[in-house]
Length: 127
View: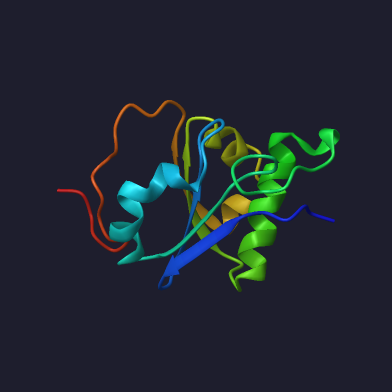
């Protein structure tokens, strides 16, 4: 059974999962979540043992488990498809999604985040 995770969901379809970096919490995304929620259902959570989430067994502190948590959170919110933005350490969770997940999701990933990229609604294209 998954430990109690702190989850925040806001906005409207389609779903966009934000995955925190290292020991960061959902607060990492506060500066961009309002703009993102104008075009997506923004789903963010504190991973096991971080922020307001309960710890889990030590053997579950691995990227594969974090990826499974993301899939379960999305399923519980009613989404079987989702976009994902993983920052820094969150890139590891993104990289560990099950093999069937790429068929279900679009992934944005920043292995090392230096600044916030421009924000566009999901249906806008870059100039």
